[in-house]
Image 1 (cartoon, helix red, strand yellow):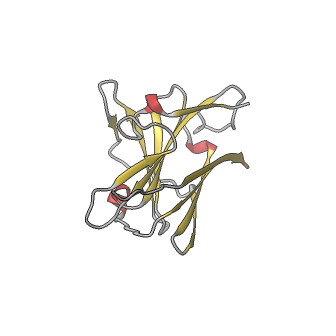
Image 2: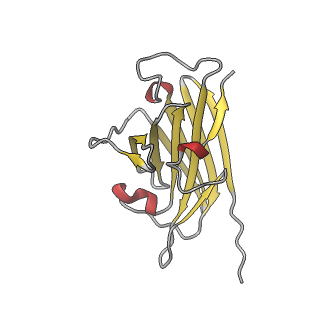
Image 3: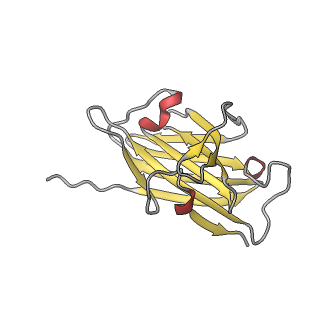
Length: 168
């Protein structure tokens, strides 16, 4: 049986009114899908919200620089509901760096695009944010594999299993 080591480095920081996610990984079998199915190929999904808000933003980027994002609302009976209209935000900045089979995806999300901040204001001390990152690894001839930096129960849409951070 062949073994495989997955390297998934995450850096998270706040700066200049944005929350930044930076993820590095290796992939020798790059597979990219079209925008509406971007998560079925090689991509990074970011789920982010303020706690305990049931409204959250999903952002998906791939190594080609394609981006998809939408608002979702958790459904108390399981799953999530997506409004009919997608709320794609051009203010979300995506930077892709590639060197051979090494990738770095950097995503900057302005605070004003998060629940509780859409009417202005910045991060507040004591505020809790929740987030989850899911790396999708697509390859021809097999199902897409999903990796996370935190135990993943179901998929990234399960807000009860997100990482929680309290701002100081």
